Image (cartoon, rainbow, N blue to C red):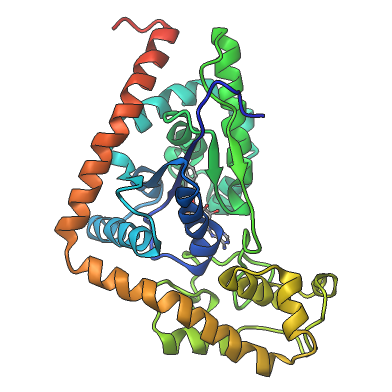
Length: 338
Ligand code: TYM
């Protein structure tokens, strides 16, 4: 339950550690735009400090940050309606991140499955930042007293940790200062899967480019990737229950449902009984019709990086009006002499 005294505020972030994928778009950005249009106060962030938990080439980081900003705007995030920032320009994120490193417990962090997946057998050799990452993520959210965080399914555990950190801080200092944030994980595409392997998440870090649709892919590339997407030999079922043990089929139908803003059952009422040879071209056409305007607009915006930088600078000023007082109050609660 959200503590009632907190006014609704939405925060979410995406790492500028590579290009945007269809997974980011359907699982996150599309929802960001809807929440902006619902009239809530919305803050959206390029989390560059998170990206450097693994080494980033400086020129690529700068380019990816601007391209991500262009992706947000091209998808419908309006800098007039939402605060759009890159994390490193709002220093209170990192400052509260340190405080939360002192609140979170080692045992909590060691349970984070995303760290285990990312570090793999290499756990002794990854950065300390990669391990501490979820404490900074909690700070991103709570430095705004955000009450709602739209994300894909893979971020669920990090949001539970955010709630644990808020609860422990409030308890340790005997205050009701940080809200207990609600994850918003909704829709048909909260977990878009790889086009090559229905058991793996679609990800910008997958070595196979054919496994994902990038927001910058052209129409031919999108159509080719969908045509080659792994499927099974059966026809599509007429009801969602028929997709249960068919991860690849389920993924393509989920993508169709999310792009066309219909329920899975509504899609299957139309396409049930079809073979993939008939369904895939329809999916490709739908994907191209939804994504091409976004990638064209991204290219247009990227032609003027100065304008993107001005938008992010303005966002940082607006953001700090919220974050500076919350950090000051946090320090006061903790007994830091001001
Ligand atoms: P990141 O950059 O990996 O992903 C950004 C958003 O996209 C969603 N997403 C997906 N959704 C559905 N299917 C997929 N295949 C898929 N891949 C990615 C993610 O769930 C996410 O919502 N830790 C975060 C960034 C972050 C953040 C935050 C998010 C930092 N601070 C504060 C929310 C609030 C991350 O690495 O997301």
